[in-house]
Amino acid sequence: MRMVDIISKKRDGEALTKEEIKFVVDGYTKGDIPDYQMSSLAMAIFFQDMTDEERAHLTMAMVESGDQISLSEINGIKVDKHSTGGVGDTTTLVLAPLVAALDIPVAKMSGRGLGHTGGTIDKLESVKGFNVEISEDEFIRLVNEDHIAVIGQTGNLTPADKKIYALRDVTGTVNSIPLIASSIMSKKIAAGADAIVLDVKTGNGAFMKTVEDAKQLAKAMVQIGNQVGRQTMAIISDMNQPLGNAIGNALELREAIDTLKGEGPDDLTELVLTLGSQMVVLAEKANSLDEAREMLKGVIQNGKALEKFKTFLANQGGDASVVDDPSQLPTAQYQFDLPAQTSGVVSEMVANEIGIASMMLGAGRQTKEDKIDLAVGLVLHKKVGDTVEKGESLLTIYANQEDVEQVKEKLYENITISDKADVPKLIHEVITK
Image 1: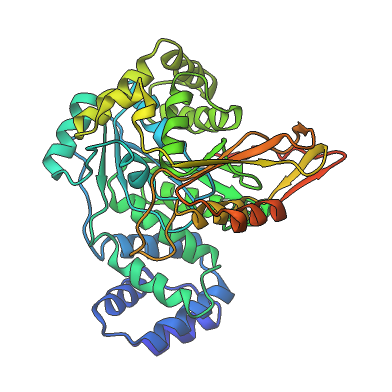
Image 2: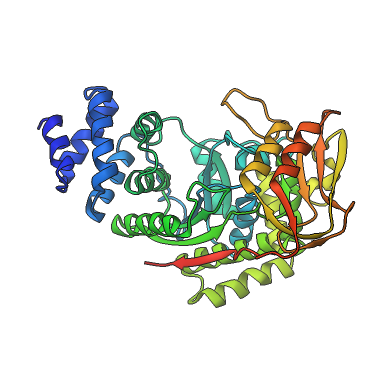
């Protein structure tokens, strides 16, 4: 088998076989295939696309390039959730204990985040003592006993994907549906889940800017998951404005606690119930999404979800008393309000740029080496569609620096007040097959 023949075949729009795809992935991972040939194939895929079978074969070849986590010792159907990312995306912090409160195993592997705020692990580390560096045996034991645990991502998970993504990043081939879909799904499948729920974001704060592009990606990932034996469902959710009100690690953790009490923002609560309902159905604990939603509401109302969060934190070394007393979480030295410069209706909040404002305060990382300030960030008091009077606070800035003028300037540039507003729809579509 020769790489040049495979490149030519895909360039001419032909489908590659399972063996050809495995040859490429194995050869590139080992260093036998040079960057210039792999980038040529990536460009051919970019223009010629891939069939459903090719996408599934590419995904599984990347899965098999490194470690695979076996969750077979965990009782029940293991359901994982993946979000394509956004601003103020507190979902996992609420979703994991909420679903686990229904005795559904949530075995979550997470990484640290680059971008506006930290990843799920960074947010959880706002709790003093919380530790994800636990053994695989301990991870499995905790999920079997209490139905929930989070572990740090292994360094050798899908090495082929890491190498191929780094190449795509510098060759203009990132924005390719088959390459994005196989990249995301390879990590989820290697992490051992039986079923996968996907939250595909769309809008100015998301990677997929249009609903149509997000729909294409969601369908591609659902197709891959189902084709390789993982039950997969997806929703397309809006990221034209930040989700919830909090942007920043400890601030988001506090908001997660409020949401588990039934006192969280409406949009975050709705998204969690929508995703959670899919997880409950895939775990075969409910026959319909409506039945699943009522079950989830029930464990919020009776306090089981909040108790599960406490158990989860304590099991991994965290001080669970923060759930009853969130004032123990890291707290910023300064708070500044951002007053509205005019009266009217909030008509636009550019999620991506508001996220950058939070990162300017130290809430996120620009490089892997950056240290996150867990205390800082933003809490919104107004969202798109809300009326506001001149001088009224649009949001509060939580900072550990006295000078936040550049942050304020960035925020004013990206929050628009007009006479009227079109409130974005939160859930654009649910994709089940």
